[in-house]
Length: 146
Length: 160
Image 1 (tube, rainbow over the protein chains, first blue to last red):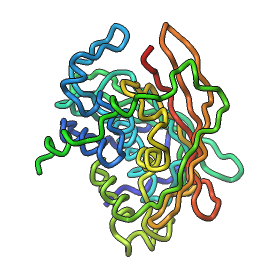
Image 2: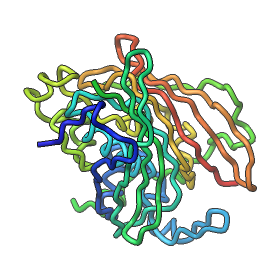
Image 3: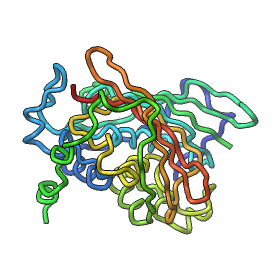
Image 4: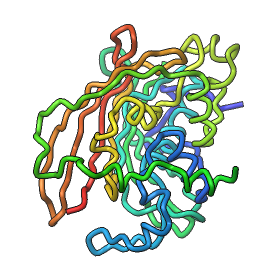
């Protein structure tokens, strides 16, 4: 059973349960296929081998930024929805490519609580790291609780 | 058919790229043509499976009916799917080699099975920074009741 989160009991610095996903080339393809985002940097290993982006050579297909973003939103919805809460906003920046073979995991913590217009908002900072500890994405979410 | 075989038959964006507007040709504030789409329960559930989000709000009608949403909903990030459903082949989102640097989205009401979704899409900004071509779009997805589902967009870098 998911833990029920009460606004009054939350404290700044409190950690939000982590979620993770193992990234594979097949999963990247499945995301491309369901979203119809067939950018070759995600699905064409031969094309991407020769692709240089500025000074960066990707070397192989990479995951979609929105695949990582979906994990970040999942961390929030799994946390607040069972308590009757809502996700209002998510900002994310993608710092490093995500490759097949990576395991990416969220690390999130409450940074602010505020009441505005009678709504109880919770601000959460989120990092996503891969298995080596490299930050692949970072962001900020605004949730509310009843 | 194996997933590799499916992938080998995917649309080739490097071919459909021909004729797409270059960075120098796109105009800030320009409204971009879009098309409505209908979001089905199957689309939502397949998307949720792909992102490995098994929340019962996407799958269990009885559970969802008792929730704050009153019925099945889609994951918030369903706009990843809606963007390509609601845009035309020549849309900039299909440009090859584009790198997604970030996303910001505001969520108003969840998308639900059976919703007819329309998209208003504009070019919010473009600029050159660190010798790279940056493009920002503003997207607003609205349901059949005229209610905004979500709005936002990303920062993307295009090839020179």
